[in-house]
Length: 244
Image (tube, rainbow, N blue to C red; front, side):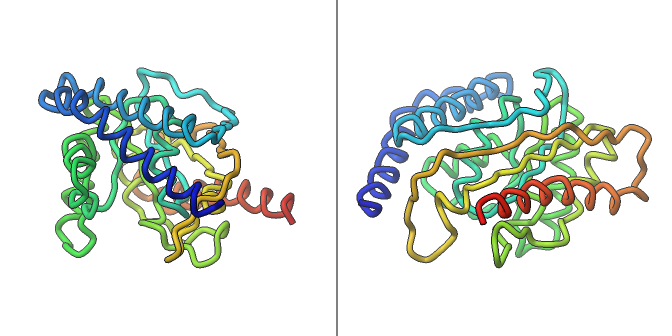
């Protein structure tokens, strides 16, 4: 049954995107239309979770203002995290993610047009992606990032430590708040293993209160990084104790 459920999730995911992509393609052609393309991603994600019968339960301890700019930081244990963040956070944002996505047909095209790519094999790419992210924030658009720097945790729900600094450098430079997001159980739904299997659980997440950066300088990057880690990790460890 788990194999059949996994096949259904994969087929439905691809079919749904093929149906929506022609519409999205049109809105990716001009910068002023891209918020609509972003909205289509939200529709895609919402329909996906509905279609696979998976409730998305978000504890919103903070409701981000639509016109405010933020840097959203979440833990990253599963490839499901990207789709999950697309429905959890309603703001208009750009993902900062691996350039490998560009090789995926259609999806790669959308990612290249709408988000910020990082090629971790190219040293200059990180500097370029940081500069582009800062410009994105300056333009009034939020950033979404997984500060672990990929799926690197060896024993979820224990996160990889330390976080990468990029998210915190850009937040301080632009004086925008960091909003921590805890993805509580995606690693149980779609574990990062060689044998790909979907496991049915209600998807659960928490949007935390923002950490203000007004008045902080680059000397505070380490503190901001560790505080964000602490907030997310506290929830993950509390969840682990409850389950145990």
